[in-house]
Length: 317
Picture 1 (tube, rainbow, N blue to C red):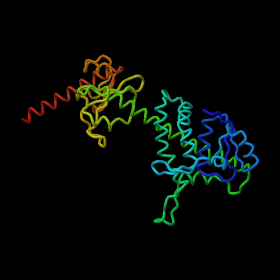
Picture 2: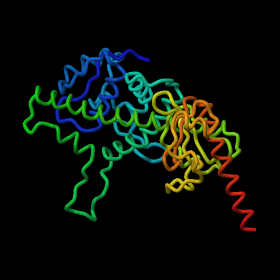
Picture 3: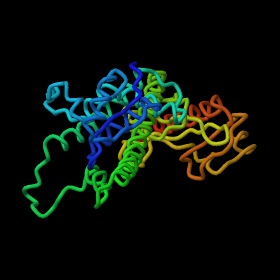
Picture 4: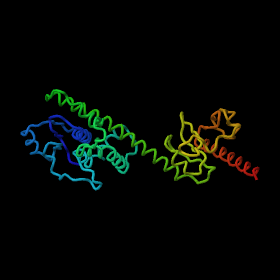
């Protein structure tokens, strides 16, 4: 990657695309100096060492033709910056927050998600204002409005620069939070996919997650599984029933009634699982001190449920 030493943008009232662009560039090139100027002499001097400068909305950065993407969404300054540096920005954000296992493919997935959610919206706003004709007295309250409302009422070099940096902070914090949220969601998706791939396909066997995750129901409800198992608090493992559908709390199976409310030795004696720890008083969750213990409990509960259903079906006949 080229070694950028100066990030140069215009020095008058700022707008969302230039604030967003400088946020990304400054993260990717943390040692670069940010220069806001309208001086033709400053720009001409910087252009002499253009190889170490990144120009943003200065007139020197418009060397690429104004074109739309294949999906016909036009580029603004930010779209171009994100194309060039979005993946590097995502990597830098995740590394700063000690996010584990950052692969190029993982960073690319997040960069694409941010492009669709953020970059497209900023580019459309910057290049073709959306229509509010049916509500003539209503103006959109957008991120663009929030950023541009931070311009000082009375312009001055010092006041403008201070406001610009505050606008950068606001945009950086919001974008960073959304990148971390996407990273967590993608990681959860990978954990869920891995657990489903490793599931035996037998309803007696639980779907086993190697991390504690929340957003598993939609995928697991498509299976015939009755229970899931995952790490729990204080180095314990918990088994939870699978809902009948993702949009209901009605479950397919629960712990056998004789387990309800049992803890420690009584629970271990009732189940025959040595490290069985506790069972919810209505059977909606049960736990053990190890993954193997929780899996054994889930199998016992599933087997008991299926045997009870078979007995009911036989009686109906």
